[in-house]
Length: 137
Image (tube, rainbow, N blue to C red):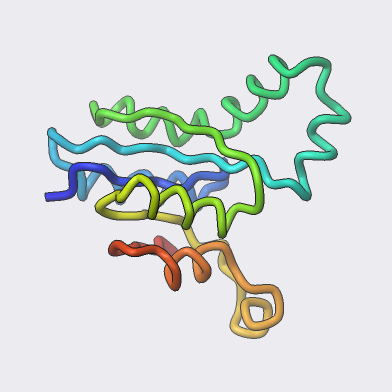
C-alpha cells in the first residue's frame, strides 16, 4: 500500500476532487501530504496585497481549507507543506527528493491546444516524477 501520498493542491475544485480520490486510495497507515506551491508569478501580487507575512500564510491556508476539510472528515492522517517556486518543477523535485509512493494532482482542464502551447502542471508532474502519479479530472 502507499505509505506516503503527495497531494498537490492549489485550492481549486480540482484539488477537492483529487483529495477525495486520495482518501479512497489511502490506508489507515498512509500519510497524505498536501503540498501547496506559492507560484512565483502569482506570489508578487499576493505579497503586494498582504499586510504581513502572517496574513499571507493565513490566506494560503484559507485556499487549501476545503481540501483539508475533506481529509479531516475522512479521518485521514495528513499534513500541509507550503513550498515556493514554479509549481510543476517544485512538485517534481519535492516528490523525488522525499521519495513519495504516489502523487495525486487535479487536472486544470486545459484543452489539447492549450496544453500543447501552455503546458500544464499535471502533465509536467506526470512526466518527471519517479513514482506513480494520478491525475484527477
